[in-house]
Amino acid sequence: ANYLSELNTSGITLDGQQLLAASAIEGPVLLLSGAGSGKTRVLTVRTAYMITELGIDPRSIMLVTFTAKAAKEMKERLLSYPKVEASAVHKLVTGTFHSIFYKILIHHEPEKWRRDLLLSRDWERQAILQKAGRELELDEKEFAYDQALQQIGLWKNTLLFPNDVRPETEWEETCKILYERYELHKEHTGTYDFDDMLVGCHRLLRNNPLLLKRYQDRFSYFLIDEFQDINKVQYELILSLSARNRNVCVVGDDDQSIYSFRGSDPSFIQNFSRHFPGAKVIKLTENYRSSHEIVATANRIIKRNQNRMSKAMHAQHNFGPPPTLFYPYDEEQEATMIVTDIQEKIADGARPGDFAVLYRTHSMSRAMFERLAVSNLPFKIESDAESFYNRRIVRGLLAFLRLSLDPNDAKAVSEIISSLFLKQSVLQEIKAESILQDCDLTEAFAFIKTAHAFQQKKLKALPKQIQSLRSLSPIVALEIIEKDLGYQDFVKKRGNEGNIEKGSDDVRDLKVAAKRFDSINAFLEHTDHMTAMNSEVKKLSKHFNDAIQLTTIHRAKGLEYKNVYVLGVVDGGMPHDYSLESLRKGDSSALEEERRLLYVAMTRAETELYLSVPHTRRGKNAHQSRLLKL
Ligand code: ATP
Ligand code: MG
Image (cartoon, rainbow, N blue to C red; front, side, top):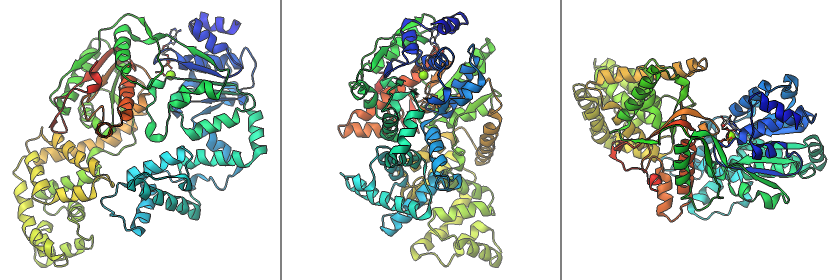
């Protein structure tokens, strides 16, 4: 076609298979191929082709991306193409599933879906579960409410309502009851959560055949990127909206399905041709992103998965060294080695924006963040998480250190009160006693009269114990707080927001962070500085165009960087402990997802890829990830 050759001359080339995929407009199309093969490029060109050459009304095109950022990028790319008018791009129905379907909902039921009725925060939702948990007399402190919340979300995204759930374990039994109460609570208060946006739209269209028909007529073309991560409710929505015209073009790579915890299910892409009979299946085989060495290694790794569709993939580029493994001692040295390497490369002319540091979970980024924060290099971090030192468990530990230096730190006293399982009213008592006895706040712990008898003895000894910490190194002091001052019990009972595992991880992470410091004072100064930096970086990084990117692998999906460093490629890091536990129980699907994660991480790199295999992780010996065994 004319337009496509015009694009070609302006540098936006497509190979034969890509051209085929970009111009097969009518009927169902599945574009299945590996990372970096130009799937997203095809989708963008296809859209441009439809609105320019074919004169298709952009309002009838639904273009779904996985993140809001991806939608924005795609629009920008479209605008840079010849003949594409801004007014047309604005008319496209584009965004994430959530944003697109939320607009439909709010159009028809504006009152019900008011913005202020959205339960947007995890803790808000958890609080509802906790209240229900109390009514059920669940062991408040042992129960993992965060995981229950995730389980409920999973059910909803699979269109399983409380009545549909058939629990197989005691845990699921409890979650089901919590789920019932959670839904009731929202009904009574008129609130809703993110998952309700999709479920609500599904219900709206199912209950209003006329409305459904209107939207079936309105949307004539569906284009969906990252289709391997679609879940049941999203799939059903697309299936019903496209039932009349069947112009559905999906692109994806089943090897990059990494959101099973949100109900993503690669079987939708694997069975696409069955649900859309007559679908054209187009496979791309050239990789335009990464060097030959990177493509070859990533392919060798992902081939170990049993549950996948086979794909051929050849690199177009021959430049670049093989992926490099490096072996730091621990997380701190890992960060230092990477920053040093980046600095050297920048001195040789590289740009900060050429680098990305990827990790399995956000909690792995602490040391990296701290090294970069003092390095003067521009960087951004993709996360809404609070500073590491503000996490509840960590805050509690630091409070003991603070009190050892300043026995009158009232904030620290109040923090400690909750970790000793005392009532907050004790704070008043402590303040009163410190006046009566003319002593500092810490000493006043010894005079508390309202505590349980079993606590009295401990409290008597506490002021001396805290005082004696001050001359110790932070790491030794932390060990004592944990073992002798009862903090371990607190972690065991409270964990981090209802997650015991994460709670003790925080303690271990803090000890790794403290190791470098000789005095408590220096360490506390460091933690305060880093907490301040955390919000600073978030504000600043919005203005950085050219910056090192720190991000979880999940959030790096679809993106590419010249040089990529992957942190913690050890057993327990990636694959994560959770999946190793599933494996022990005989379920290898979680391990396969970890392998896909590693594959996604590796295939973000264009020229250089570094995998870090630290000797220790969270203070314990670690072994090279089994995913690297070929
Ligand atoms: P992922 O699976 O990671 O999302 P993808 O298949 O969507 O990858 P793209 O991001 O579309 O791949 O393309 C990867 C890179 O290759 C991009 O930089 C893109 O501009 C480039 N590219 C794609 N097709 C071609 C082509 N025919 N010629 C030159 N470069 C291309
Ligand atoms: Mg893509």
